[in-house]
Amino acid sequence: MNKELILQVKDVSKSFGGVKAVNNVSFDLYRGEIMGIIGPNGSGKTTLNNLITGFIKKDSGKVYFKDKDISRWPGYKIADAGLARTFQLLRPYPTLPAFKNLIPPLYSPRARRTSRGKLGDRSAVSIDILEEVGFERDARVPYKLAGALPLGYLKRLELCRCLALKPELIICDEVFSGLSMSEIASMVPLMERLQRDGITLIMVEHRLRELFKIANKVLVLNFGEKIAEGSPQEIFNDEKVKQAYFGGGETYVFS
Amino acid sequence: MMQELRKERLDRGVKVRADSIYAISSLKEIMFLMGPGLILVFGLLVLPAVVSPYWQRVLCIAGVYVLLSISFGFLANYVGLVCLGGALFVGVGGYLSGILNAYFGLSPVLAIPLATVAGAFVCTLLFLPCLPLRGVYFAIISFVYPLLAGRLIAATGVFGGTDGIAELDVLTNRWVNIYLIFILILVVVFGISRLVNYEDIGLVFRGVKDNEQAITASGLSITIYKAQAVFIGAALGCFGGAYLSHLYGWAGMSLFAIDFSILPVAATVVGGSGILYGPLLGAFLLVPISEALRAFGTLRIVFYAIVLVFFVVFWTEGVLEYVRRKYEQFEHWVRV
Ligand SMILES: Nc1ncnc2c1ncn2[C@@H]1O[C@H](COP(=O)(O)OP(=O)(O)O)[C@@H](O)[C@H]1O
Ligand SMILES: [Mg+2]
Image 1 (cartoon, rainbow over the protein chains, first blue to last red):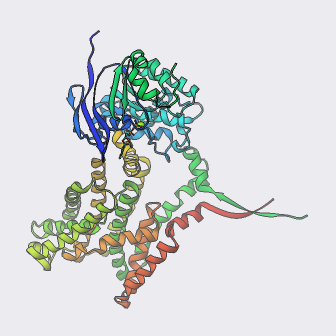
Image 2 (image 1 turned 135 degrees about the horizontal axis):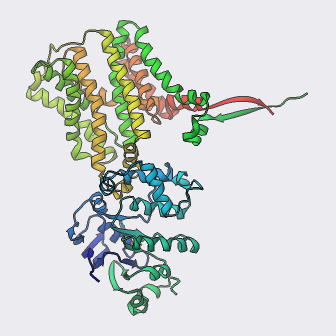
Image 3 (image 1 turned 30 degrees about the horizontal axis):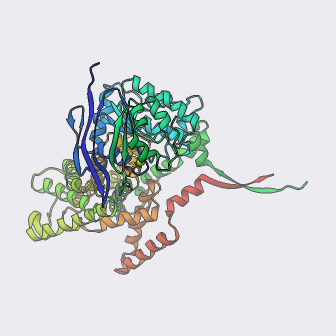
């Protein structure tokens, strides 16, 4: 199979004060893959996401997206290029109905480009996107105020903001955390469908069982450093990972 | 037979808003929704016709402050920019129109619109470097620009220096003067409220204010949308300045006076910041009151300070918020 490199992260670092939040992390990602990033709390996963997507400045290191050096691009330009992200701390517009939350991304230059001017009515497009990820149109869920939606819908709404941009790569920051088993069970097929649709995914996760089922490869962070990278099976058997991650007294469902 | 009475409170606003698109069901509801707008239109069209020529002129100047207050309210409440650049807008618009008229011989009919657009462009360019600054930093910079401009003109003596540019063509017909600005106010109020409430770009503006990161993640540049909003706000002020210079027939340094920056803030405090009409009402209250108090000389300032403190401390919602609340929830007695 001919694999196309979509994202290349090279020696990226960031310190806050004395704390090295992300320390010389590198990895390659190929188009169509699902990559998992795991690590204990505070190991730098969210910071890495922010560094790649241009939301905070890197101390050093480079990021290439589709062979373009995006290391110094501002956040909006990276999103515009097709690298979308979700926020671990969700960022809905609470006073707007759910479907209005997608108006800004649908208004963006990228959405206009990708629809080749055939976007039509943004509200209608928005409701279609919401329904695709599980907002029941018949129950009028898309019309409810975002601030009144339960967590499961808010996580999907984060994802929808990305999908509205017709992205090529999405970095999801803990979209499963805080959800019930059955909610996660309904999200997993959604992620698999996105992969089938040709979207590359990076999933920052705590829920290892679900992640290991769908990920093609997994990267493990600990204290800002990459301590392992490999297939879910390799990571599962890695001694260093077991030490740093599972030996730390944290309880994770792994099987 | 005994009858018990109970006080019932109806919140029409909530009802109408909850029904959203389906609200247009009865004449009563339509009248409820359109009432405030109709009162505004009627008020602004009738008021100039029933006052003396002296008060007409006061209202013309009040109109400029109204535009500035709408500009301030729009930028502060809908885009999150606290902009004290009213004096800059008026100054730039006024001087540009004066220059076009006096040095290039353009009639005010051309000079005013040209100065409005070109002035807004200049002001937006001036603000471009500080658009990433938030809150109080932006406010300070926007406040300093007009002071700077005034000093610069005085020191270098350009554009007539401290004397200003005199003998501009004057707008002579008092009916044209007053209705020009009053009708413009109506157009602006309805235009901006449509923009922020119904247009997609209005949602982007509000996102820039409340949810900067989500906007960035949506592939939209915060700076570009702030610049667009500043252009709109500046255009209102620049028109005001251009209009004033042809009302007086003179463009001078007093166009950069800080009153133009400060009164919009006071008007927003007095009128209420919840909706667009708040600053408008505030300006229409404050300017004529200030005029009526002219006899008291500098004591005017004391009175002003008292009014402001009163509103800030005791009546934070502002006049219009209060009226709206009463309008939307009317209480009446019902039989139980
Ligand atoms: N804005 C910030 N300022 C200071 N320290 C930060 C900031 N963001 C993250 N950190 C620190 O960087 C480390 C990594 O945090 P984070 O990336 O959020 O970890 P994770 O997402 O893996 O839980 C933590 O020690 C955290 O306290
Ligand atoms: Mg995190």
